[in-house]
Length: 112
Length: 111
Image (cartoon, rainbow over the protein chains, first blue to last red):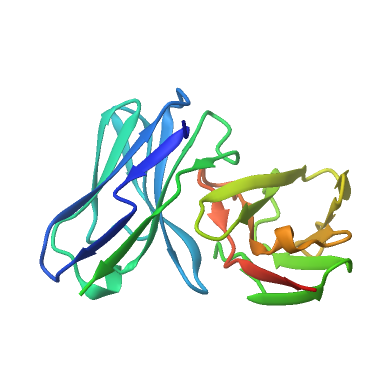
C-alpha cells in the first residue's frame, strides 16, 4: 500500500463550488504539506502543518483552507473554486528533515 | 527573493550524458536537493548534497555544487529512456523551514 494517498485522483468541478481534497499517510510523520503544480512554475506551497495543532500559510494560500484532522490526515478545501485553481495538487509528508519529503500521487483538478 | 531557476526542457540521446542545471538564491542553504517526477506520479527524492561539499556521486548520478555562483547541477551518465521525467532542484533557505522548489526541467530521452 502507498505511504501517502490522495483522494480523489481526478476531479472536475464548476466555478463557485466547494470541494475538498484529502490526504492520508501511514509514515507516522508529523509534518504535512499541500502544493500545487503548474507547468513552468514548479511546485508552490499552499499550506503546511508541523503537527496537529499547527497550521501555516505557504506562498499561495489565498482561496484555500486546510484542516489537520489527525496526525495522518490533512485536507485541502477550495471554498469557492475558480478556473485559475485548475492545477495538479500534491500532498507531502516529512519528519523533522524538511528536505526529505514523501509525495502522494497527486489530484488533477479542473475548474470549469 | 527565493526563486530557484532551471531551464524548462532538455533532450538527449539514449546513452549520452544529461546535465540539468539549477541556480538558487540563498547562500545559507545547508542542503540542496534533486527530486524526480515520473509521468503521472508524485515527486521522489533522488539525491541531495550538503553545502560544504563540491561533489557527490551516486551510481549514475553526479551532483556538482558551486557555492560561489550558487549553481547546482545534476549529471546523469548513460541516460536511459526510464530517466525521462521532470527533475526539480530544491533548497531550504536559511531563514525558513520550507522547501523551495525550482521550476523543473523536463528531460526527454530519445533512442
